Length: 435
Image (cartoon, rainbow, N blue to C red; front, side, top):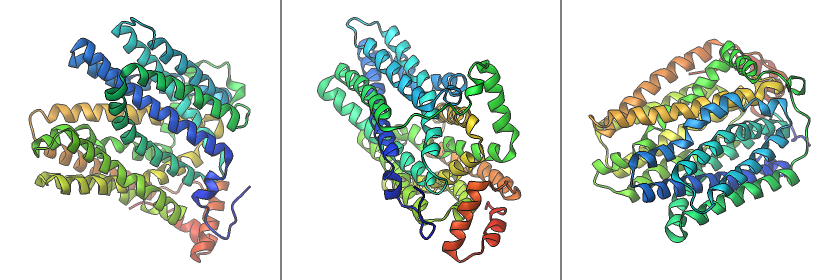
């Protein structure tokens, strides 16, 4: 059922779609379980080995295998039915986490199994990202994406904090068992709550996966607009540096673990609260116009840490920086609308893999530099560099005139009716997006 053109769709319209409710709930469960398992295994490995290196290797499972899975496996969600891919991934991950629960499992085997579990995550994520657009019309998709993005941020903070609490109260093994259970329930929700759809690229089911990767790279990097939009998404590696340096940053201010947790929580909260409001209240054309400036501001605000602000001021700065990260919804929506359905999951896999790996590299480099200069200076430098990159991307986007597809044209016409513009005026405005 399509939303009335007389008004903008609301989040109630999005959650009125039963398929999306099932998908959202399955995501909350499995993502929370993932964070729970990661924290539990990191603590367990360190407790048994007393090795900071092994603990770091365990925690790195959230980044390293994602590149392999994102490149090699994400295309499965185009060549096979996306619902089936998600269910299969949930079953496989539940079984692998179940094996971790076997008594006497060596540490090396635990870490290896965790890496395999993480490698299976990208095709699930790609299938979920692609199928959301299948469920939603172009007008409701940005709201659905905003709901998932805000949920991700809340789960990141709540899952990490809750994971430490659960491990402290019940131990690592119950936390792992809970993770396995979340995958089972997630798979059941997807199986019962979403409908079967044919594969978007069923005719390519037998193609060489490496050829599919090459085709995905050519699609994304060969289209200047897609390339620019993806790079705007990857800017998160710059404005999320404060999270990677939270502990040493607050240490310089005389704070401890609680202060570091608050710093991370407030930074995530800014975007979690602002993104749904921005997506609901601001029309699609205006979101695209503001995308470039907001991307630059999300990074530039961090340059203020060069003045070494106190804890309260730092929390406000990081929250404000992440508030402007709501531009990601505009980039995400424009990215989706330019992708052919039969290559959507592969493109999402490449974009997600680059983002996750980029964040891991940024955290590692920031940590290394923070060994010799104050963390506040590192964050300021990262923010300044990110702002320069963002301005370059925004100017590039401004010079582009992306083709307006059927869905985008309807979107512009709807916003034009709400703002008093004629559709022609709106379409002309669309070609001049950016700073």
